[in-house]
Image 1: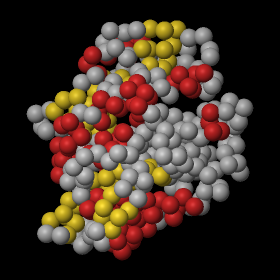
Image 2 (image 1 turned 135 degrees about the vertical axis):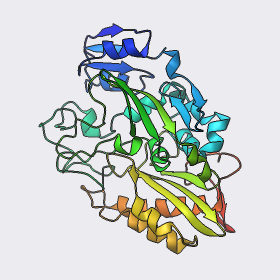
Image 3 (image 1 turned 180 degrees about the vertical axis):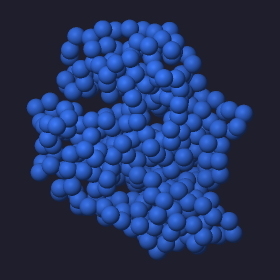
Image 4 (image 1 turned 60 degrees about the horizontal axis):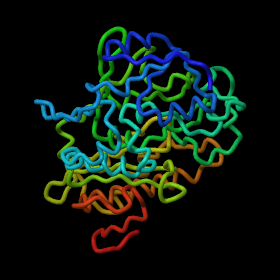
Length: 353
C-alpha cells in the first residue's frame, strides 16, 4: 500500500474541497477501496474520509413521494428498512443477495455504485489493463473470460459491473445526486456507468472531486411493488458476484401487462436496462412464451468476448425466470435465500427451485 495523506472533513463542502484532484479518493465503507489499495491497484495520494458525515446517512421520504437514500446508508440498513423494502422489494432482495452480512453492514449505497469491476486482470498489477492504466492493453482478451461481458464491450475492455443493487435501481429509474467543485447536479443512474469504448478508465460519470451524496428512487417505483423480483446466478449460493442477474418489475391490469421493467446484471460494464424487452411485454398477457421472447430481445446483439458464450443463453433463461417470478407476485416475506435461483417459489402451481 502506498503512503497517503488522510483528511477527515466535517461537511460535504469541506470534503469536496479536500478532494479536488484526481489523486484523491473518498473513503466511506472502504470494503472495495481497501482491497484495491492493498493490491496496489488504487494508489490515492489523499484519502478523504466521509464515513462520519451525518447528512449522508439518512433514508427519507421527500414531499414529492420520492425516497432519498443517503450515500452512507449501509446496504444492510437499506435492505431492512421496512418502508423502503415495501416500496422497492426487488432492491431489498438484490441487496440481501450480495456479499456477506458483515460486508453488507459496512458497505454503503454510494460505495456500491462506485465499486470496481471484479475482472481478475484488473486486480493483478502485473497484467495489462486499460481500465487501470490507459493505453496498457487488455490481457483479459484471450485469457479466461468466463465471467466477462457479452454486451456493450469494446476491444479496450471486456469487464463487467459487479453490482447487485444497481440492477433493480436502474430498472426503477433511480437518480444519483452528486456534489462537486462546481456545485450539485444529478444524473439518471442508467447514465452513471460508462461503457468502455476507448476510455475504460473513466468508468463513471463523476468528474474529479465529485462525490455521490444520495440516490433517489422516484415515487412511482412503488407501483411495481406487487410484481417485482431480483434473480442472481452465481458460482456458489452465497458471497459471490453474479455471473448474470435480472431484475423484473411489472404492473398488471385485468390480466394484461400494463407496464414492464427489465434490467440485467453481469453482462456489461453497466447495469443493462432493456427497453426493447419491456416493449415486447407491455400490453400482452403474461406467460412463459412471452417472457422467453422478451428475454431474447434483451440479449439481442450480445456476443461473446471470449469463452463466455454460455452467458447469453444463461442470461435469457435468468431473465425469463425473473419475469415469471415477478408475474406470480412479490412474496409477502423475503425468500430465505434472496435473489437465489435455489429459493423455492411456487409459480402457477409449478414448484421451481
